[in-house]
Amino acid sequence: MKEPDLISILSTSFSLQLARYRELSDLVQKTLGKLVLTRGDVCQVMDNFKHKQEILEAIIEERGKVENDVATWQQNKNSFPDSPAVSCLNELLKETASAISEFLEGEAQLKRYLEHYKKPGNQS
Image (spheres, rainbow, N blue to C red):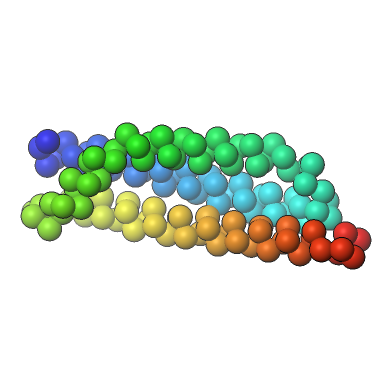
């Protein structure tokens, strides 16, 4: 595959993944907020959990589409000459890593809240 095509494919894919991870982070924060307001009533956020699963499945599908392209990039990225497109892709990769980290932090926060709320005596 030609270098510009590979970079274009990856840039498009990681832009999409970045948007989805940001959507996940927002959804997790909204879910946590709603749980707090409803005093842990999980029934009130079941739609959020379903939507979260749909977004995760879309990310997995997108990752599968570009799996070989990512492997090619990983093997050859040091041989690509510096260019605006390569810089843009590198920035997208950094932003995506940051968005994943933010999502995982939100997930951990949500998990801690749910575990705390499940303990006897914490429902009131």
